[in-house]
Amino acid sequence: MKMRNWMIGTVIAGTLGIGALGAMAYNYTTKLNHELDTYVLPHTTFEGVSLDGKTKDEVQKTIQQKVEEWNNKSITYSLQGKDSTYSWKELGVSYKGLDIADTIFKEQKGSLQERYQLRKKANQNGLNRSYKLEPYLDTAKYDATMKDRYNELLTKPSNASISIAGTAVAITPGTDGQKVNKDKLRELSIQAIKDTAAKVEVPLTAVKPERTAEDIESMGIKEVIAEYRTSVSGRNSSQVFNVARAANTLSGVFIAPDETFSFNSRVGITDAANGYKTAAVYVNGKVEQSAGGGVCQMSSTLYGAILQADLSIVERSNHSMPVHYVPLGQDATVADYGPDLKFKNNTGHHIYIQSFVEGGSTVVRIFGTKTGKEVFVSSQVVGENDKSITVVTYKTVKQNGQVIQSGMLNRSVYKKSAA
Image (cartoon, rainbow, N blue to C red; front, side, top):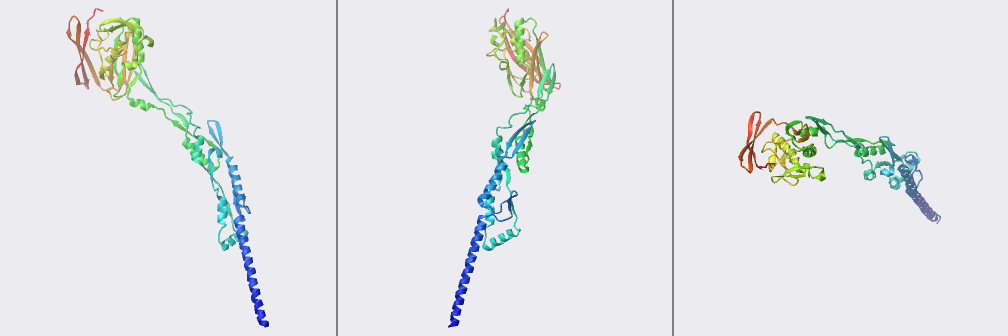
């Protein structure tokens, strides 16, 4: 009986002991889980600041404080002695590592055994966790900030130019301008954020002119390829004035290869409103007084130069009556609304026209690249009566001493007049 009671007591005592041990284990597990789910283990730092014992919210607050601190950092951009300063926030700096709090507590997860070992390691100084923010430049935000900045030209480029004095051709080289190299500036800003640099020298880049010396050289305007002169002897002052005015307007034109040039388009309306004086003009075989009288000497002088340069004639009309300043058949009349003098540049290079009145002569020079051609123009009266004269003009072209073209150029019919 005594033995039986002893055995029962032993069983009850064992059961109570196991229950107590179970309760102890449960309490320990609960406490361990709560500790690692709620607080950061020892020897954990963020940017050198201890996070030991902090909650997730406290860690997040610490991270945010660091972000706000770094957002107030700035970069000063120096451009030709002038500084402009922008905060990291204004520049669009963002950060990798904002999820550090999640990472820390995720690392403290695991089985009971894993968590026990992790805490034991931390308590024995064997756990050293160090976290950092990684700042970087959000280029989309940066570009938005810099979109309207540093766009102006610092210095404007100047185009190369050609100048002609007499028969000498001179080319003045262009000069580069300067502007901010915004692509390079973005690269330097990215690096400055990585290095936490406080200053950036704004990089510059050259701005090329639209027309360089090489461009002008390639145009082929090297020398005089044709020159023609007519005398203003016998012209009155108003006619000479009008010839000179038209010459000034005509001079300085560049004509591209295969471009068709129009005298009327270049010189424009030759009326009083445009500064031309009243002088004698031919109108349907009669002499009348009108603004612009004498301008046809300019177009006829140009026509003579065109023939000497062997350019392609597109449109040409003779006067209604003979003129004294060029041979019959070699004149070219113009009027505000037609007829016109047109030709096509067939040289394969650009040409340049220079025209002026000097020393009793109207002069037209055509500059370009010599072709080695020689042009001979002659006129012959093939018919004449008491009312009109008919003239045929011929042109012969030689190259390297060989005739490459010969034939009739045009037929001109003039009315006779005692005037």
